Image 1 (tube, rainbow, N blue to C red):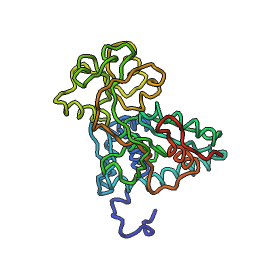
Image 2 (image 1 turned 45 degrees about the vertical axis):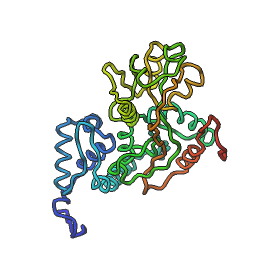
Image 3 (image 1 turned 120 degrees about the vertical axis):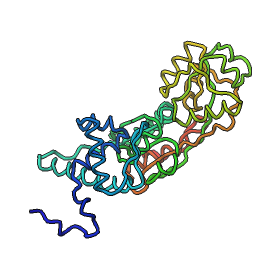
Image 4 (image 1 turned 90 degrees about the vertical axis):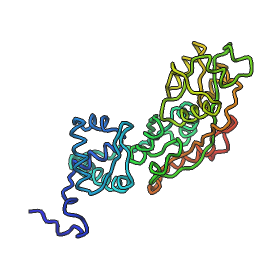
Length: 323
């Protein structure tokens, strides 16, 4: 019979009953940020995943995930536990691959998460620079709301995120380095009724509005801007984080798109859309690089971050040491 003699006496007896299925379930939910998505990957029902997580928390003697309608978020205890749970599952997968006579390991890609507004503006230029330095590097891009990206980063599913800081509970084990700050702008098609005159927030209410989805920082900033003018966002909103959808709606209608400066930068430069002269003081938000604090960075990640530090503020790249 297996003996627990080698285990520390400080480990509770019930914790020794934690099994691999508990760890795989926990790591997958932490990585995906949603029980439903994790259940699909694990080929289990959502109730089965929930039951396994409940068992794990009882055995661990700690709450590891806050689960609700907004997804699954790691608690402070969950962040501490995740690092070791990942080590176990990763090591077992590597051992199984070795037994199966797997060839040399596949190249590790650089896994980048980015806010939709950043993915459509800063990221393409940064990737073009990175490609010059590392032509053989595989790159995977994931775009999602900030909260989802930070959960994936904390869970080890991403190597780096271009996004915003969050509340302290979401920043456990993560670091933030400021790249730039941006503000909201009001954007319309050329020839729009408001395009040729000074406009106000109130004027924008005369037209359909395209805004960020609920729960995002740009949406909070938009609501706060309207509240400062004694107004509320009206019914009939088009809510999206997809830049292509927002751009398409604005170009084909009299809708007013409330978005971040960099999200519409290329379209403004090409004359596809026009920026309204609407004051938006108080909507400045910092954008930066988020990484796991304790992890050693790969050379590819360091190159990418160096490129991001040279991000253009006025349309021109700062000096970057190629080669």
